[in-house]
Length: 217
Ligand SMILES: [Zn+2]
Image (cartoon, rainbow, N blue to C red; front, side, top):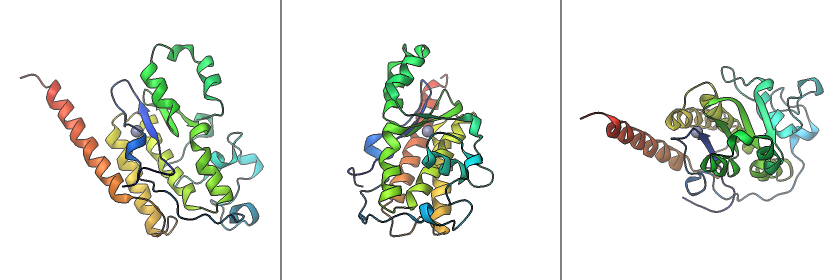
């Protein structure tokens, strides 16, 4: 697996669970570097892949709006439950309740998206996802939208109460597989599916080991 280039970082920020963000990224460094205007800026090719209409605005960030409006049926995320953090330090200043939880804060700071204690809302951290939206908008890498939709699906799983990291990863795996099958993420796109699968297996094993440890003898 590669550890350079774009990194996907997401975590559920419960006290006991979450995956370490940087070293396990399944996204490989991009090989595409052609700066062309993305189709979604110029053409309404498909209701779900076009720029959301003004009255569909969810957030102040149109990339996140696009992600939210691209969620497949059964994975809908209500606008009211989406928070875009454009300035992480300002976010922290507004959340004094988090100050006693430094590990959680550090994980959140390095994450593209996260939930707190596996509940709504889903937070999107602009300082981390900006390189994705930039590559999507100016690099023509449309597949990144669908990678982000899978990340949002992962967090949706946590936001609806499933705290286990393996549950989030399972949603993410299933969405990535589906988007590859549908051609939204082309086979040539630099995404390491095997790494994501291995990450899922490692997580399940770690969770099972933790259950065994807690079980009374
Ligand atoms: Zn997670």
